[in-house]
Image (cartoon, rainbow, N blue to C red; front, side, top):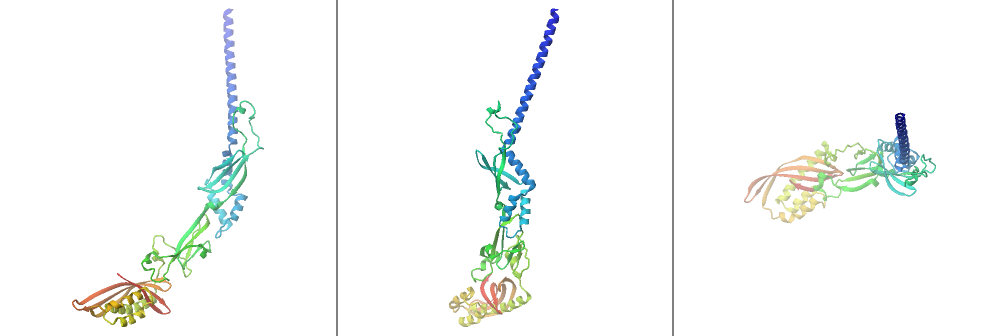
Length: 378
């Protein structure tokens, strides 16, 4: 009898422990569910959750009334609203949008919207008082926690796409034109003038009308716009970034080469006779001046040399040959002529000497007349 009582007691004790264990497990599960519910409400109440949803929707929709109004008000002289809209959609797509917190108060948070590092808008969040919170934060133990579970909502948004602007900059000869989307850029877009050709740097300063380049810059481009360059004749010109400025220099026509060759022959003869001192300097200059631009660098050099030529020891000179090796048309009637001439001179104590003279001469052709401006021996 006593043995049966002990067995019944153990069963009851075991059953009590089992029931107690079930109660503990049920209590733990219930508590975990409440904690999980609180955690979900907590995550939903974070401003980052609101911003994540806003950015995801903006990336998918890529447009709203605020963006459309901003685009219409933006300066985009060479692009239509539709083209700018397409560029903005492309820039804001493919996960390019991010946000950064830029300031807050107790009841308001501001975020900066960014695309590829550039700010294009601002969003302001405020607590959403109308939203239902699934946890009673006034009950124990939630009232002991310092966090509010009230979610946030978008109060306002503003956009400014000037941070997405890119620039088009191009350097061209002064008489070329630059076009963007069929719009010709006017002189107001020229940021620099009188830029020398890199292949003619040694020749500037001798005549003020030497050809130069200008730099155009246009800043109000959304996305990418390729400039179209047209030369002085209105023909499309493609600039090769791997070439120097000689690509802007036009080859001479056969007619131009013929005229320059005729000039070079007469110029070489009179120049060599003058600088040799064989003839009277005044008479020699008079003959040579028919080939010189008055008051040019070369004209002044020849005048300055006049006094010293009377002391020359050369008694005779014969110009055996002269030839135009080539010429470049620089524009505005300027040419760079490469001239070679051979001569035989005779001087006391030296006898007969044959010389070859190589020179580069800048000439200006105006009204059927060709005159030399500058000469450099090489």
